[in-house]
Image: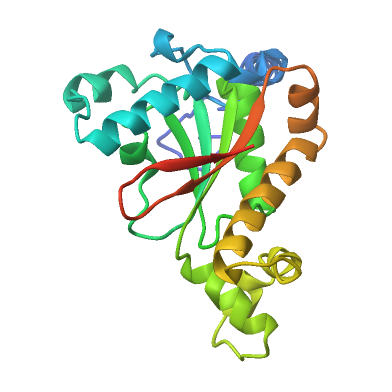
Amino acid sequence: MCNICGNPSLNHSPIYSRRNFLKLVGGAGMALAVPGRDLFAAGETPKPQNVLSPGEALARLKKGNARYVEGVAKRHDFVAEREALVGGQNPFAGVLSCADSRIAPEYAFDTARGDLFVVRVAGNFMDTDGLASFEYTVKFLGTTLLVVLGHDKCGAVDAAIKAVKGAELPGHLPELVEHIEPAVKAAMAKSGDLLANAIRENVLRNVENLKAASPILSQYVSEKKLMVVGGIYKLDDGRIEWLG
């Protein structure tokens, strides 16, 4: 009779024998002891060309945007890239972008899969989830550049302006725009176009928030292993206006 299931015709070997148990515990210990890249399944470095300094990463984005604006984007071999990226990723830049359907960072910077680590939300603001995502790509994937990418005529920022002026927004929109309202209020004290000023202020504030985010990003910034910059995507020609 089996001591495990009670079936008189079977005789299962104990699944968790002392030997198997020790193997299991030992394996778990080894998993906890390995470097962070392995623990978080970052995998190999499939794109050696993505191992860049912060300055090199920014220069590459600028060149890519110039190609995009001129309409001479590179031809990307998606089949070969798919195979190369099965084992891991090492994006050279992270982008905090608006969710606006007209804004596509991979296109705007003429990059391929595996090049950018993109977090998108209407209004391109940093919340806890976005911050954790960037901490992951910086610490475990080797990303050396973060870009906060706003765009002109942003509907989320415009909604935040309306909310500050007293408009009632439906659904969960009030929770969304409250992240943008501090930038709107700061922009109201400036002369010029309120929407344009608020978009710029929102980008700059999120750049500073990412730079100061402890314990991970602020440390990498102070050690000059990470650069955080801001930009505004121009809808009429696709050009990125770099801030600061």
